[in-house]
Amino acid sequence: LRIAAILSGDPKMIQIFERGEDVHSAVASEVNKVPISEVTKEMRRKAKVINFGILYGMGVNALRQNLESTKEEAEKFLNEYFETFTVLRDYIENAKKEASRSGYTTTLFGRRRYFEGFSSKLPFIRAAAERMAVNAPIQGTEGDITKLAMVHADRFLEKNGLKGKVKLLLQIHDELVYEIDEDLTKEVVPQIEKIMKEVLPKEKTKGVPIEVHVSEGDTLLSLK
Image (cartoon, rainbow, N blue to C red; front, side):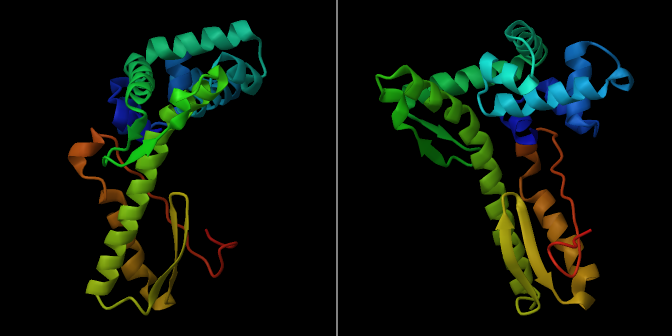
């Protein structure tokens, strides 16, 4: 959602992140036109469904199923969402049109993904390509950011002679798992956290802060 705000430049979505608000509650507040203090659990749940749904190109029928509501209610909710976040709406429509025209999408860093489905004669294949074209720049940019963070962190470790004491074990989506000598955690962990937060240049974030959460423990299962 942060990346969707960055790529689209939607001012209302950006302001939510700038204010440090819970994005699902804030979106529920905007769409339902109530103060954030009056947002119910059900309002937040529905906002969460649509927040992630639009990133995957979810239409009215899929939204209806996920909201566990009627088609009319889902349509009304979707319309209200896009009437609130108009810049995000336009970004999504333009992403579909551009991908259909060129056959590919690009991430924030210019990496391309091609879609053969746009040339299909079958409507459901073209529809699937459209959905993927909405999602690919967002997920792809997230992947780019994570991989750049890995490279920058590796340079930091090498520069400071820490490669033998701090080992990258796993990348899990946007998460990096390190094995670190216990006496180095207080020194190294804040540095890797800082690198991950700052890997995207400020001029590219449009004011959206990149948040990083840190957990430590003796095993992956016991991280806190």
